[in-house]
Image 1 (cartoon, helix red, strand yellow):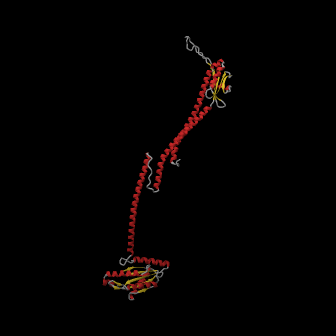
Image 2: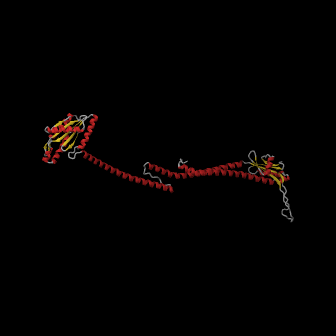
Image 3: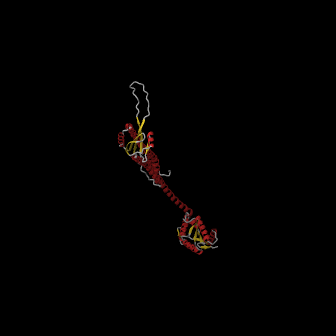
Length: 442
């Protein structure tokens, strides 16, 4: 029963007592009514039989059959009377009207005991004895004598029998049962209608509330329900709508806060990314020339070294030193010297391939990393860079040159070994007159 819908449970709780009481009352009314109908028929038959026996006293005493016949004919006119018989004390027929009644000893004994006999066809036979009345002698004491009331046994003169049909009472009982059932059904129908109305009045608002809760659970925060049930249920509906409005308002405020937070987070993230980019740029870039600094160059060297060891690729490096750079600082000042370094950085950047990397190694020294480059090609590119520097006219400083020390990766070279060879080649270029490219393979 707990698994049933609330409407069914309310209907069952409301209708079960009504139906039970209606059925019991209908059964009781039917039983009592049928008993009353039977009792009324028996009482009427007994009354008619008593009146008949009293009226037949004279005729039975005098043996006047004409009087008795007239009484039977008058009695047969009673409603439901089927037969009337008057006999003497020995059940000899004196008068009869209507249906012949089969008189036997059992019927006589029933008449003496005042019992009603049911015939084979279901009719009721009433038998009453006819007695001669015994008058009390001088019951009024008119002579002023003391009289003793002597009670004598009344003399049995005969019997009066009356047979009444039960068909009309049966029809009355059927009609009574039908009317009782009709009233019971009508009462049950009215109770069912009222219970259904009550169930609907209770469950419809609850169904709306449940539907509203489900819609709210699905995220439909604009849900509102109709509040017209009246009484406590309407207060519940109004409370739900108020709660839904508060939830929606809180949700909108939360969305607004979240939007502001997202906007703030996005702005802060962009700001952080820019700062990280700036930080990465600063950590990887030489402040003066804008080229890679030594830390970034060392990282690139490690990456190329690992790639060469793993995949067998090759790369070369060129260590570059500006010739007689100290004389520029001494002659023109450090600012001019810085301008020379910046200009050389630009020249190197513009004359290498996009896959190569160039940076300031320290002081007036630069380092170029030639990726996927053979020894011969690295020498060619270095010579091109040397010529570009030699052909450039520097502001205030005029023409300037640079020396190049080039080497190539040979398995299983380490980075330190390559740098030492490049430095040795650079030293050799300096000793051989500067402004030249020297290569060392071993």
